[in-house]
Length: 316
Image (cartoon, rainbow, N blue to C red; front, top):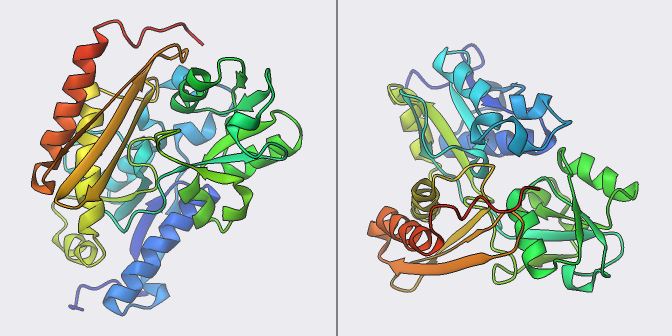
């Protein structure tokens, strides 16, 4: 490494949320950078930052704002020079970053699928009529009600450990978590089974970590280039263009998954009414060099079919 490489005297400061999963993702980033550049652990400092989404636990996310809930304070620290990079769960990220910041690095993506978690039932289809399902995700709520309108869905906020505790206390008979999060926490066995995308299409960018930096920081740009995964980058470009085209937020039930297939990229997407009464789905394919165009075209197709009032479904 060059003379400006991170060191114990001047460590690279990694900003992150303070949840166990967020810290695991920050640690994964640190380990990848250590391996790529032959740096010691002391050359890095993980800096936990509490966000609005972490502080407000008594209301649904849809009531307290959009996708900046889990990123704003971290980005403020990055702009202020209090941290050098920020590690995010990409499904929490707005499609636009503050001026001067950019997501320049995607490490390899983890399993993007959702996981069905229950102390009893083996799958959502096996739940008895009227069973209570807990989730804080409007997407998952709409998807399960679309397929099982007989179920009762209740609000389930908190990190992975909190939601597992609520399940154990009987607050619900089942919940849904991201397989990626469970795997990163060493809790993959908690899942009864991963849910096939054909049954429950995951959130846009689920399972992907994004690393944000100040765009004028050439040193950090060089460091991050060594751990960027091009395949994940292609997939995320398509998915985030799809989300941007829909103007998606935490208040909008949207799902999307891009996969690399022989000859290019396949993007599946769906939008749902908030009450689960309707689901519109479509897919688009093309070369990876046109990832953004594929995402934009899929968004335009679904918006054209939906009409202007589609997301004003029954309030929940």
